[in-house]
Image 1: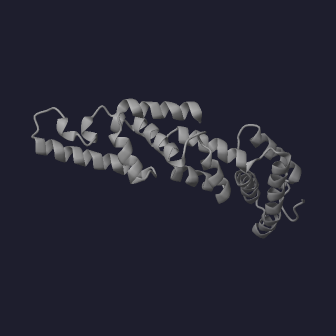
Image 2 (image 1 turned 90 degrees about the horizontal axis):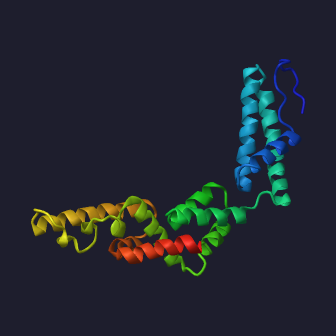
Image 3 (image 1 turned 90 degrees about the vertical axis):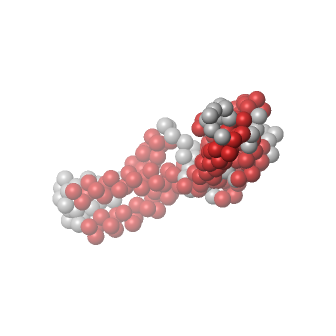
Length: 225
């Protein structure tokens, strides 16, 4: 695609061959979705745009080339799908497993995959089989427990006041002071779970769980996902 009426030192816009090479180079290093690959290639095109503007190219001419390159980018990404180098289903399943094992809620995983351009039905399918033999609630519970361990909440906090038996906390406080402090800290912990996308019922179950049982859930998530 030749440019006309432009400075001699203005770079040529990337053609399909150059974009294909850029796609293959990216895929050799990173897993991505079709949408994600399109964004990578569009950034490659944007770099050319900036270089052309710096070289003094006419803005209207550049805009015309940019418009012509968008379908080329889409075609290259579609080619990568046909070759099997890009697979949104496989990407979604792998990413859902990884994020769940790291303590991300189902809502957070959904949002992450949506941002990567994964279609709603593909996201739903990926979340259904995150942990073999686990129901959706069990998967969410084990992810919440993993998050609790990272943040030292509930059964992993070594702070009994986060649980409903807050009155057993030792110290010089009165029973009422201990109760109020326990309630406040419990609400704070519930807020952490809510901001992470976990439901109130899951959060309550986590905060009340026996430490040994909680550790078993976390280990099952690691071994079976």
